[in-house]
Image (cartoon, rainbow, N blue to C red):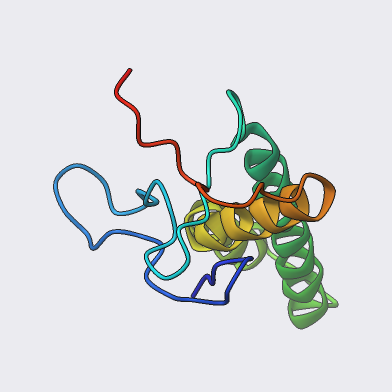
Length: 121
């Protein structure tokens, strides 16, 4: 699934529960890298997810047309495209979050300890 951009460690996302199956931890369990670096940090991950999902939908749409050629029917093209449009954002969510955090770490490297501010608010 997704790996920490700092150390490559796994276990960034919590197990499925009633509170949400896509909840990312505050910091990497292996190295302590804080994931939400600034307010609004995940907006970039949403953009990455949108781009990845759009590319997946376009690929499925083109493949569906090619497979159904020369006489494509609406349902032959619509069903796989709709299924992809529903599943792609959920599938790419963990990948886009870790990819976005990796891009942010490249531009703004974390300061040396502490990586996660543990002071009470």
